[in-house]
Image (cartoon, rainbow, N blue to C red; front, side):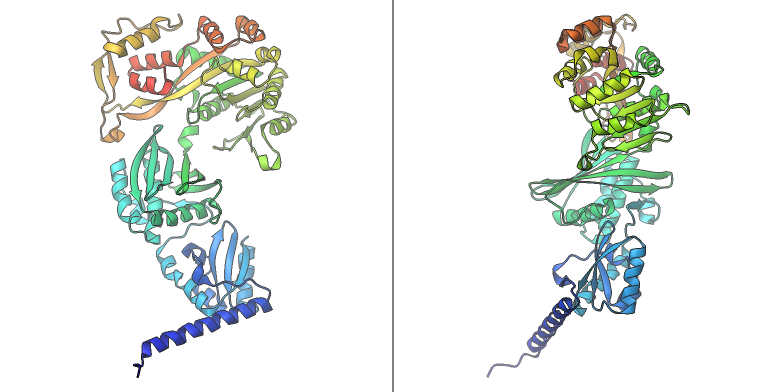
Length: 556
């Protein structure tokens, strides 16, 4: 005779009871025309559960189990109860959009279990991360990548939700303290890679598990207002970091890849827009030239350079210099990175047909004095911008070319008529960002070999307005060494190198003949244009940067 197993019988009875519960919930869902759900198959977010206090949720027999922005998913047993109706109405008054599901008692118990975790974890609210509330985060000393790694590792490797919440806060604090411009988190085949961009260069911080990353990604998506269930297409969002000094905006971007989604968080530091023209690093002659152009009532000023070359910072510095109570400044950007006081800013929305060309047309009906167009991408935008410059407006914009002389052939390639290019453009400018040598550890040495030849060649045909350095071989220069103050890179901070030319009579005649980039460059140098490499050579000899850095950035 088979032996009686009491435990197996109890398990069987329990399974039958659960099955009956789910069947009843399914029947009620059809009766009340609500979708049915079994929460055993669903990821329940602790921060979502926290939207309703535990006592209220248990009393009303409901639970919020997922949120996507203001859209929330609510599990319920009895939609006719006064307590449930009251909570749903309160959520609606707080601008939430509830989607209600019929569930079993067992499902609700599973959701309520998340309150234990929610009590430990500090939930994110309305896209804001506060770094001053948690003692562990606020007291963390982070002055280097190594220190950030030491703080992060025990939390991010634990794979616990509460610890991962603290990991994100520690990561954001570290990024701010180290002056990082971007945070990169990339899912690879067997692990996840975390990097910070410091002074334009990416540095590895830590590798951690894919399980931890999925939880961290969900946190970041919720915080940024992104859809949790969208993984096959790119998404963009924003959130705010709250510190003692004020709020800092973070722009979030996700991108699907072969092993999962990668995410980049760009930190929009207020220090960036605090820079004035004097802080950009322009040579005195270039600075005076740009100041004179900014005092003109009309014309087009074009800035070129790759992503991350500081174009936005430069244009914002120009806007601040030109801004006064007597002028109306309007911008159209994609996206708006920084909000400027006293300036009307609009953002491209291609899904609604509001692109640069349409936006520019709308701006011209708003009686502007100064216009900033984030980027010239096509003939239509270019021509509208130029006609605006010709009809009494000062216009700033950017263009994709490698250097300043390349702006002319590029505009012609876009289909712009040569006869309007010359009278419309005041200034064409290109720029790059080079790293500053660390003032603590930079070391002095004398140039020799290829470096000496390259710098001597760069300054050989220096325009007459610039003082040619005597006896370069005898004068000491500086190079990177590395110390704790600069994360052992030898560099701290960045400065621009520029090349700028104006449209004079000779270049105007050339434009009508469809010139090559080389011929424009030659004419610009004859008028006194300092090339980016020459600007870099002068900054090398002045001890601001290294020649290695100039060559790396300019590619010459």
